[in-house]
Length: 410
Image 1 (cartoon, rainbow, N blue to C red):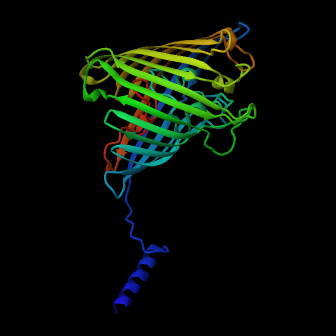
Image 2 (cartoon, rainbow, N blue to C red):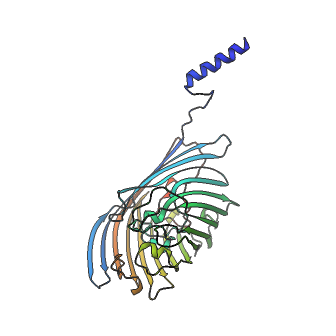
Image 3 (cartoon, rainbow, N blue to C red):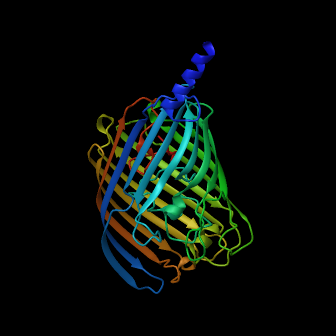
């Protein structure tokens, strides 16, 4: 009789579940985070090309607007959790992408109080600090390690890619991370190659002292990243490794949180491989170079609520094996916070390239001046809040009012 009851229960279980095994798996509704931003600017541009000709243009620009969804559940071993992220953004006109929408976040992972593991497409670990520019790619040639396997103007191929990454916290302030990366590869025409093969990696160590823990002058963040790329792509050279070092710090200049002065500095040293010229994007990414970016910002924050921010960012990149191959940039910016998540923004960007970088073949101009005024709207909401606080879903996205490390995730 006991055997009969066991068999009957198993049959009923199979009939109810429709599966091939006895399984009791309750339908757990995940915590859902929804975040987005809309950025629209009116742009005025003045470009001086290699021949000295001046071209002026104006346009409405809605690039870099995005929507991100996050899903989280606790694992059986509390307080560990699993999560998934889906996000897409609008791309710039004429940037060599086939579509106007690019999926920049497609990842899954697990984590806990002291660690996080992520698999999928997300922001590459090729920069350390968030700089106060209206768009994340306004100084992309200066702020990230270039993709030596891509020969295209698509900025997304420089910022995002596949990876298997692990981040762990040795102490609440000191953390380390490792990643195996799958940067987008293209052929010489700029067409992306199929698949996302692993072609690089990185190691990062950082000291991160959140402002909420103690308000005082001093270092807010110190980080060091070692990055390498496998350049067996494009069919232009034998298989080589491109090694790059990124170092950065963020320093609070005062101890008044309602009138915050902050200095951000980041340097990138690319050891380089042999290239004969700097006309194409992949050649500039592979060439030996030294880059430094510094930003000084002031945030007016009565009652610890930012009302406006003024910033000045300067940058220089020098291709050390080529004559007069230096690029400098100057970017003053301003953000006026007119409401929660609603900012009026303005920015001027001036980039000047040395004669060794000016090429008509790749539209590398002598000077580029860009003025913009616009509105930035962002929002975030969490439904069925059931997983411990992991940060804001908008941490995936660039915001010129954010300062400190580019860590990603929520």
